[in-house]
Amino acid sequence: MKALFIFAASAAMTASSVAYAADAVEQIPQAPQAVEMPVVFSWNGPYVGLHSGYAWGEGDAAGGGSDDFDGWRLGGFVGYNWQFSSGFVAGIEGDVNYDWNKNSYAGGVDIDTGFSGSVRGRVGYAMDRALIFGAAGWTATTAHIDGGGFDDDDMLNGWTVGAGVDYAFTDNIFGRLEYRYNDFGNGSLAGADFDFSQHVINVGIGVKF
Image (cartoon, rainbow, N blue to C red; front, top):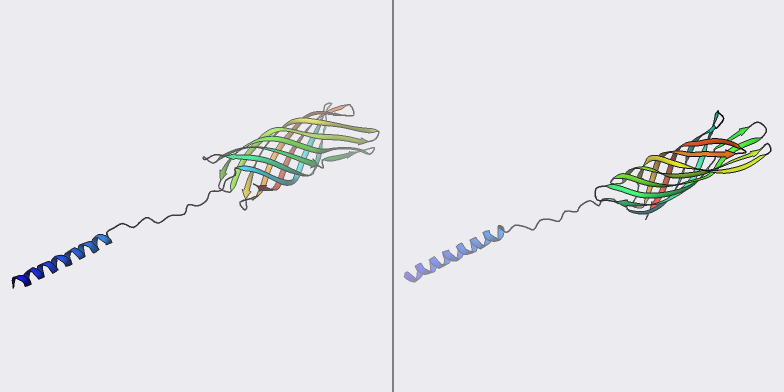
């Protein structure tokens, strides 16, 4: 009888130990599941692109009077961006363009601009795939008069300022819309002094590396 009691007590203790061990296993916390963080797009690095647009030019003669020189333009650009953890972006960019800003006068005289270019510093703020930026720097253009016994060229140098937005359609391809104002300063054609400036709208496509 005593042996039976000892056996029953041992069995009860064993069952209790097994139940406690099972509860302990169930109470072990599970490892947290890995959460995939969204990849944030970066504008850092070099890029190249092409743009086209329209320019509204104005020439002011030194002796008084002004005239409009409007036309289409086509060009290319190359640059480099540095993006900071705060979302701010700084960069440098150069571009070369050809402007069809032309005006014709009596006697077969034509005045137009041709090649233009600029080197600009850029600052902006990136909101993932959208980059809002401002830019300013040096710019230059060629001017030409022809016909009526005239044939003269000049290169004008000045400053440019503008703003725009770049948007990345893929990790490498981005589009651009920008406005800029170009003040080319003073020039001289056939002995006549003048100032020339431009308002420009550009639409472009670029490749980021």
